[in-house]
Length: 332
Ligand SMILES: Cc1cc2nc3c(=O)[nH]c(=O)nc-3n(C[C@H](O)[C@H](O)[C@H](O)COP(=O)(O)O)c2cc1C
Image (tube, rainbow, N blue to C red; front, side, top):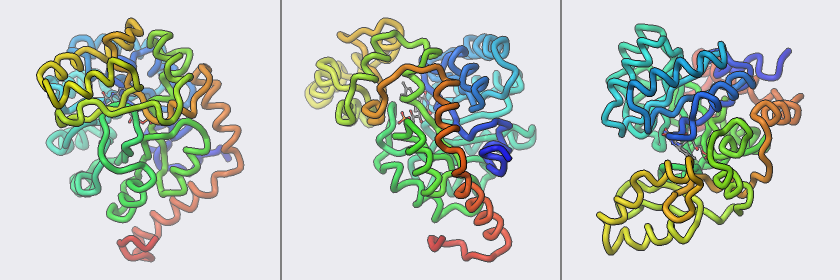
């Protein structure tokens, strides 16, 4: 029996491992998405910085590199989110992962077409609302993650989600960079993990080498939140530039906003320490190597081997919930 044979996320997504590449603007290129899918996880094209036309091209490029399933992450803050979804439909993308907002309006049509839908949430209220509207997967993202953050840690958010949700599977995101994090996530009730920062420091990630080096040399306290005073906090690696942006947020918010715009691209493409913001989570401090994605997943699978009891138990809990063996409450 394979490691995750009874895992609901693997069944839903058609993958070997319940490891999802977090949608990452700029970073989530076809090469990385294909590498994650080829290695047995679910690769994700990050469409946050793409035009609908670029997204269509990225989907085609990814398909040339893998015939395994992959997802598209639709950033709902992106003004062309509606058109991104249309492109995904035209291109028959099997899984859509929505970030930074409420995707409820898309769900009826996507469900009719048999597309698997997932939403990244930082709150139980939104998760419950979406479960009632038929979302297939809830991805709970804790504030130790890289990129835009909520206010609660993964360790607290996942059990809180499990307490309010009825049967939709929960995936944990934020702070997971090795098999210990994966085990912890499963112990909290997650049935899969979504990973961002760890995948930046891989061979197939096309980020500038300085970005990868910054991650593998950072400690767990080497991130800060930019954009907090502007209403869109994002976790990035500490740097003189990042600190300057934070200071400006109070004195000159307009200038701070203009420095933030385009700063991830500068980090990703040029490794620009002067004007780039290197989005990354606290788990950067747990990462010291730049393996290929398949080396990474194989290592995790090896270290998780013989440990699939929790996943099995989780499935039993879900079955019992359906049969009314447990009350729907926080007493699991
Ligand atoms: C560089 C970077 C860009 C990101 N861009 C997006 C995005 O466009 N859409 C989204 O839903 N999440 C985005 N995220 C969040 C990731 O999808 C993922 O949930 C998060 O990185 C998980 O936490 P971790 O970094 O601790 O692994 C981004 C994260 C990073 C590091």
